[in-house]
Image 1 (cartoon, rainbow, N blue to C red):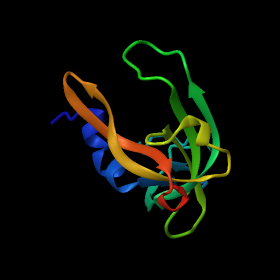
Image 2: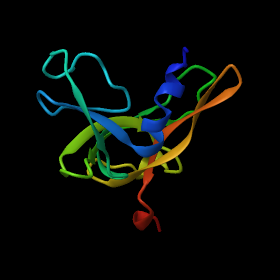
Image 3: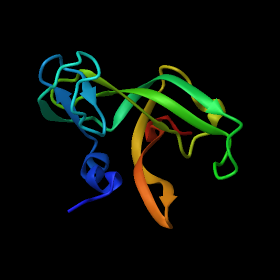
Amino acid sequence: MFEPPYTRTRAANERLRAHECDACGWVSFPEQPQFCKRCGVDASWSETRLHPRGTVRSYVVQQRLPEEFETPLPLAVMDMPQEESGEPARVYGLFTETDPADIEIGMEAEGVFRRVFDVAGLPIHSFKFTRSRGDRL
């Protein structure tokens, strides 16, 4: 039976479950690609869990987007440690519940499960980032 991609990746998104290339250790989140984007081999993959808190490595605040997007729209690249090894995995996503002026490179943020957008009237959920609760005044 065919399932839409957002249904197939739901378990990964809800649990910060990622896939680690057995050949080189590169981590893919949330999808499990056929070929590793780092080493290029037709890789086998091991499941790895990501810690819900990570560090902002880069970000952009988009100001001009099509009407269906709310602006400003902050998008960050995060290093999220793997739960078992502690090795960082690079993931990206939208920021929510955070003033864009408060986002800084090196700050700690956490992944929160939120509605990202709608498809044919159905909500699609995934992780967004927000300032860690301990960092909020």
